[in-house]
Amino acid sequence: MTRYGYYPGCSLEGTAREYDVSTRIACQELGIELVELEGWSCCGASSAHATRYWLSLALPARNLRLAQEQGFSALVAPCAMCYARLRHTQHALRDPAVREQVNSLLDRPLQDAEVKVHSLVDLFSEEERLNLLRSKVQRDLSGLRLACYYGCLLVRPPEVLEPDDPEYPTMLDRIVEAAGATVVDWPLKTECCGGSLSLSRTDIALELTRRLLEDALCRGANGIVTACPMCHANLDMRQQQINRRYGTQLDLPILYFTQLVGLATGHAPKELLLHHHLVEPWSLLAQAGIPA
Figure 1 (spheres, rainbow, N blue to C red):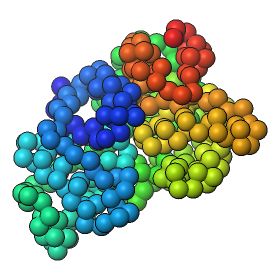
Figure 2 (figure 1 turned 60 degrees about the vertical axis):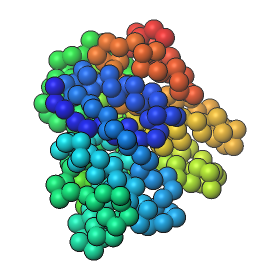
Figure 3 (figure 1 turned 135 degrees about the vertical axis):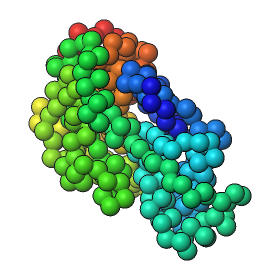
Figure 4 (figure 1 turned 90 degrees about the vertical axis):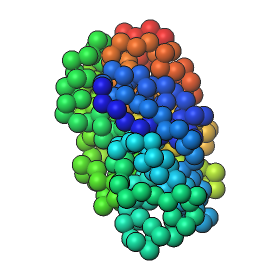
C-alpha cells in the first residue's frame, strides 16, 4: 500500500458523502492507503477567492502546512474544487512576497518542503494502477456507455493543474475503460456546467447543463461519470428543473468515477451509496446485470 495524506474537504463530509465512501473503497482496491489530515479546514473554494484574495490563499496554505507538519510528502484531494485551490495556492506561493504575506496570516509559517498535491483522477490513471484495476474487475460493465465529464476545475489553467491535455483530457476515460465500461467520445467533456452560477444565475446554469446532458445522450451515453462534487450536484439535481423549463425528458444517471471502480471490483451499489443520487441509477446498472 502506498501512503498518502487525505484531504476530503467539506463536500465529501456532507452533500458528496458517497464520493468519500466510494473513494475509500476504490483506494483500498488499488493499493492506496489514505490517512486523513488531522485538523483540516475548509479550503475556501466556494467563496473565499470571490471575497478576499489573501483569505483564499491562507485557507489552503493552512492545510498544506498541516500536511508538512504531519509528515506527508503527498496529499490527495478527490474534490476538484479543493484540488484546484490547493494547486493554485502552491503556484502563488512560489512568489516570495506572496509567501511572506500568507505566512503572516498563519499562526505557524509554511515549511520549505513542498507537498505534492494529487487529484484522485491523476493517481488512478497511472499505468500501474490501471493494470491493477484491470486485474481486479469482477463484473462486465461493457453495457454502461459512459461520457466522462471533467468540467473546468481538473484541467484549467493547465500551467497550474497540469492535466494530460487541457482541451481533450483522457485520464478519466482511461480509468473508465480499465473498469470495463464503454467510453463515449464526447467533445464537451471540459465545457462548464455552470455550477458556480447555480444560485446567482440559475437560468444560465440550467441552459449550460441542458446542453451537456442532451449532447451526451445524442452521442449514445446512458450515464455520465465525474470527479467534481459541484458538477455532480448540478448535473444530478437540475434534470427535473430542466425538464419542466424546456419540456425535455432527461433522466441520465450521474456517477462518481470511484463508484464505477467500486462496482467493477465487486462492491454492492448500496455499499457505494448509489441510492443517494437524485436520478436513480438502477435502470443503468440493470444493463450490467447489477441488482439494486
